[in-house]
Image 1 (cartoon, rainbow, N blue to C red):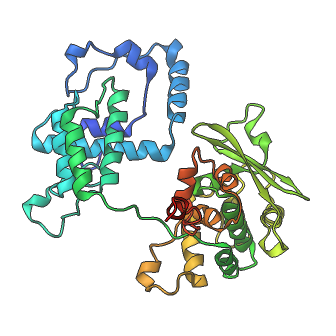
Image 2 (cartoon, rainbow, N blue to C red; image 1 turned 120 degrees about the vertical axis):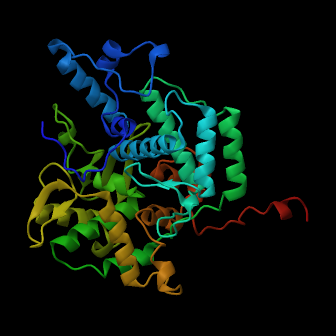
Length: 397
């Protein structure tokens, strides 16, 4: 094995653990020491018998499938940040201490400590303005706690978030620093039409037109859009698709989108549009025909020649960039300064746009978005008649 270059930054052992595979069931069963012997130092890991190597790979694959890659990456960075902070302050990261975690989230909220994705901690209290960073938001701190709880669980520990040393500090952070939720701007039906007009009629334009129309009319998340395959067969007969669903086109009716979510499979019906220019079915058919998509990922990268379609699945970040770029080019919310407009739009603008545009009974919108409650659907409805039910008049006033 070659030694790393001299300028390679040193990462602590716990950061390496966090960036490693999530769970190794068989390894843990064969190598886990008694709880009384758990220390911060890495335990020597005995060799797994050859007959169990295949089982180790299978168990690891299933463990990885329990959560998305983005979630695991975020949780790994959370644990790296926490362990680096513990090292600087002289605390032991394991076993988890509610008092230490209370101090940690307090430091994150006060802006006295920040860190990078690699786990390197910057002490903002030292007064270096060039390296300082703002205090973390309440939502980010709560996400970090979830990441720590997940990482501790993979190592056989339990984090009790209801412990007073954590719960009381977090309650104070919420009360002092919590801000109203920042919602992305919804793009309405007329906005979508204007955004479509900014696209070309080449191969890339056909793909992006299909993305906008399907995402809007289906009320889909950006990860759901790019996670679609072109056919159900990609998920059958032992095929191991990395997608999260597929489409079935009914030419005279619409598109049936089948999605795999956290709670199982669900179906989304997308009907035909009033004209071919704004019809998601026509847009999909055009993209599939000219992109020559026979199987596998529905939406893919296109090479610079704008003629060759890659086999790789498109990143969900493309959807966010596409919505932002076309909304700005179309002049959506041109009443606002350019700087404010630039942060208003994202992939979620499509989902919120359908909820805000569809003049139909709320229960149908709720079903389309896959929400368990009408209250959640109302959070997506940026423009609705909030005073349709007037309790003041109903009470006789």
